[in-house]
Length: 485
Image 1 (cartoon, rainbow, N blue to C red):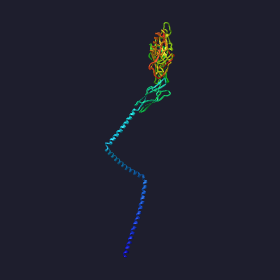
Image 2: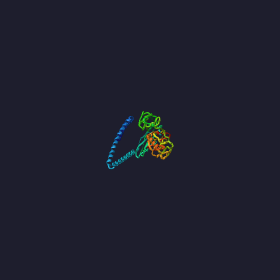
Image 3: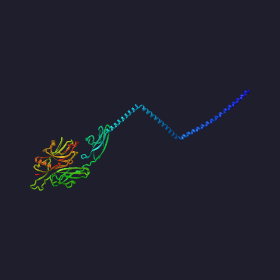
Image 4: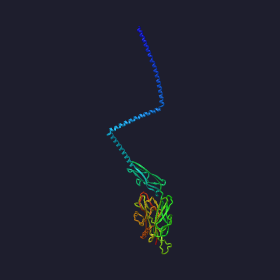
């Protein structure tokens, strides 16, 4: 019993002790919970603070992190590049006999292709056309058309030879494939000529501005003398019929082969004839003051015979007369073409591009047995057809076809040359000694006709399909002679 009671007491003590031991951990747990709560709270506060600081300092942090990342990335790239380089180097060493050969072959192919392309481009450049325009002739003035014209040539290069086209060619291709003529009229004083050269490798163009720059030369109609018959030691008046189409003020310069001119700059001028008979040339140069001149000349005969003033007994009786024309026997003949009888006298070419000659017949039956002291043939009032400036000289020949109208065969008769005159001078006077001599021969031979042919020397035609020459009415043709018994 006592034992049981004692054991019970011991159990109670043990239980009490257990209770005490149990109570102490609960107190400790409470303290631990409180500490955790504090730590959590502090953690939250710190976290929130950190977040706030991060938000406030985002740019600084972002920049810092970016720089770090970039630095790391750069190091990584460098390491990767070094590794790749090492691998490539190792691969090149291992495949030296394979890859290097392929690379060299590929490089050679590429170089060849580039060379071929360069050669092709160079060939195209060399073969492509070039063009340059230059003036061959001009500016030139055409009186017949009242135009100022240029002839322009295109200098081209290229293979194959380029074709050339002009924006204007008034020659209609007659000058050749590389030339063009541009006519400028008074109401259109400039033109921009464009020329194009082209072949399979391209084309090239050039332009040239052409302007009216034609100041026409003085237009000399002819030289005239105050008398048809001239004698030694006398004074006569010489004058030139001239006009200037541009209205320029003209100056004159006379020159004579014998004798003297009182004032060589006058028009008309006074000529003191020489003291010796013979043929003498008279020349005048007319200047327009703008760089253009025209020149004309005639040759005249100076005789010794003086017409007696009283006609007294024992003195030779002389008379001056114009020989009668036989107009029905004259006219003109076109070679290989028509014959015009009794009409005007014409020297030049026809619209058929055939040469033409004029024929004049004088009746000398009334002066048979006389002595010829002087003879002077004049052709005046000429009409200029087309542009006969391509001719050289107008020639005067003496021939004989008889007392009948001309026929086509008379075109070929051989004549006797008497004189020639500059082609710019359609109104002429011929009184050379040869004319007098041939007239005397005809009289002495008892002929009833003294016949003359006029024609141009030089090219037979300019092949332009129009008439170019001088035309005279027979009423404006005279032959004055002085004869003695």
